[in-house]
Length: 253
Image (cartoon, rainbow, N blue to C red; front, side, top):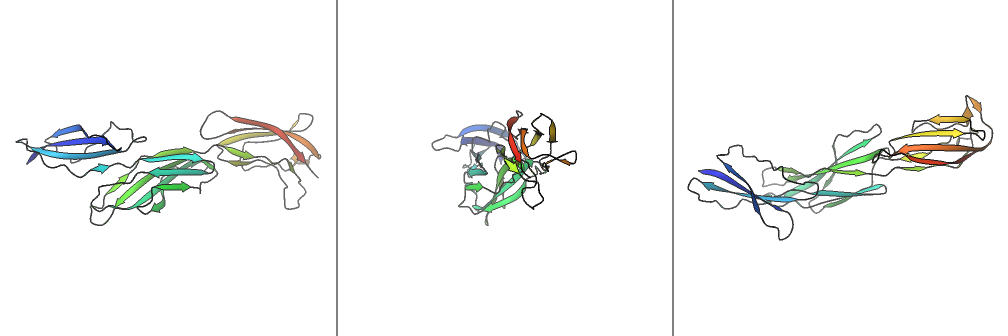
């Protein structure tokens, strides 16, 4: 009968050395949690052995290594990579990527997104909703046949897209089924404020809604053709500091 479990850990890097991290006497839970880790930066490997009351040691167990998920954002794309999960008896059947999105009217609940065969450890997510801004990912590995139907989760990665906007310089509200209203086109914007002024400094339009555009009217009356000044203040998801822009838009009739 074994009375002590000895757990050892190493960083999942070449030439790293195992060190003892726990010695559990008369332990019956069969689970142990390691809190001295930095799972967003490192992958760890574990193994264990037993000793009986006569100090006789068993052989080491198989090695189990955690999955480290890493990512980076480029414009309109999130790139992800992770290390292979090793040492399962049934090997890895597949990897499943979960994704959650924080944005305007979007949910932050993880949902299954993409399933990969075992040969994949890199993925480029180019299908990201523009009304979002913060994207969360995690990987689940599933053991294949011949094992114990085990699963293993990676750390969670948070990636943020920078806010963008495109501002048209003219519009023509003449009911011709095109270009009848004016407003910026936003991507990855959390909130914004916009104001439009005529040449005398009178505010003729204001909005804080991403879906509201200017129809060229003020109090229901058509504004004159000409050049108008706009001021925009908008916020991304990565900073509390606003971005401000000023410019002109031409109203054509």
